[in-house]
Length: 74
Image 1 (cartoon, rainbow, N blue to C red):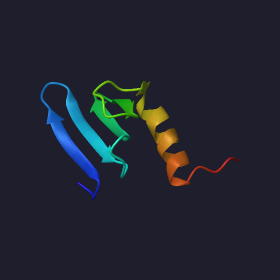
Image 2: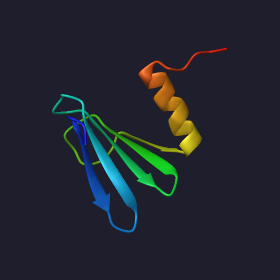
Image 3: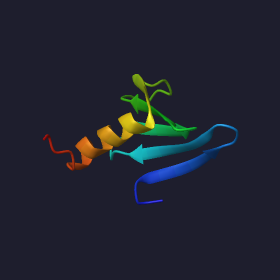
Image 4: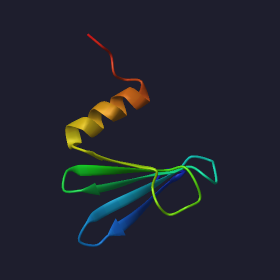
């Protein structure tokens, strides 16, 4: 995987992607399972996420487009 992104197989569930944000207290994990993306946001060193969002494939595409700057309002 790319630098700063680590992938782990979750047997029977899907794949987990951990994204290194360059901070010891902040990280994001995305679990991809059967077309659904679960986004976990961690803002401290604890193991419990501060926020969890469940995104459909379409919602994930929209979010990705906004984050990469490719979303243009018509």
